[in-house]
Length: 522
Image (cartoon, rainbow, N blue to C red; front, side, top):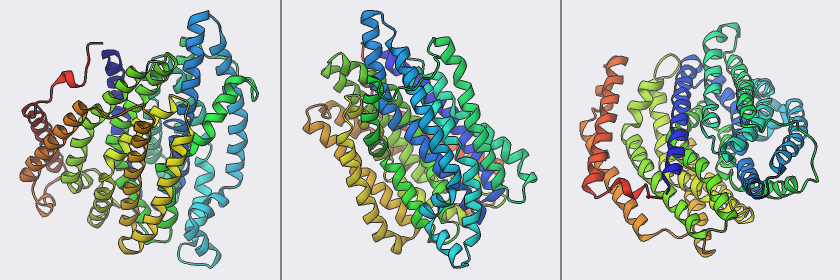
């Protein structure tokens, strides 16, 4: 693909890297403060609801529905010199503001309802004075604090979508850093002020949302798109976005809905189950957010413009490029995490309230999640192929199939493998989702994986396997890691990662992978 697109991808990935590193620091602090205790389970539950909404709006459905329409308006403005783009932004922000304000108020009032719905096991204990009854009350209180995050992140997502469509990716990509900073600060400086440290973390989520919202405003002003919100329910652009948004809310976020359903089932399992899944998911999110979401963020505006210009060849080429890039980075990430899962978990989390047993439990869930890492990444890349064309119906149909499949797998696997079965089910349903998205694009004649790209991907897989073999050969056993000090463990881990990266690059060169496979002269 073009060098400009690759440059934009690198910018987003670099900013996302900063955010993900701070996200790991945040999780290290949380693990130290609350580990996998009862309070940890409840905080992760209370944080999952707004985090789910963040995926819907900041990285998912809202952008998928809004960006294609906004690109269409900008294309028209470029031709006739009009000001319809600013009007669209005004109408969307005003309409969104009213709706989200009402939803947020309802959510804060009805938090016990949300807890009963997604933490049904705790709700039953609360009704029957069971051992987890206190979790229901605590979750209701925490969710009241974290729910306003929806309001902040909705407008943050709107601002980010506008800036991304204008080709200004850095500000929006950097914004999540502020959430991590606020949670880290709250954990360190406010935890001692509460009998239950989870309250400090909940206030960190609230403050992080506020910081992200305020951070975007100067960039909108500089770009000349900071407009006064106004109600526009019947505005033509708003109506088109509404039509696209409703199914997109479901279709692009099936993975997140599956994770919420996992939480519902995990509320019936032993204490620690939600926390073990959370920490495993956080490690999975590092490469997924850095590579998959980063590339998807960049290609959506590009695909939308290409569709508006009726350029199917370049449209298909962009998807081809995106799959090659996520494969270049995704396969070694999966292989490396598989081999180094337990040392990484040990170095990051094993201190304070986080025990050696927790290292094992998290690693089992991580192995299961990692089996679907490339599927998660391909979903992020393939879904924009539909949304850029303003097709939301097809992903919804696929999403329904994937969600039902996930629930079937949950019911089959959870009784046998416990919380690990939930992670396996999520990975399997994601793989089915990705396959059906690709098959749909192929049937519609929109995109088919080229032979050259398939060969590149196969070579990358071989290179990643060679890297994993090198790391596995050089890595000490788990028992050999334990006597080492934290500094010795960290140095050893960094050395293994660097050796792995070097061996992967060498393997890629030996396999005939070259830079021109990922950058065209256009």
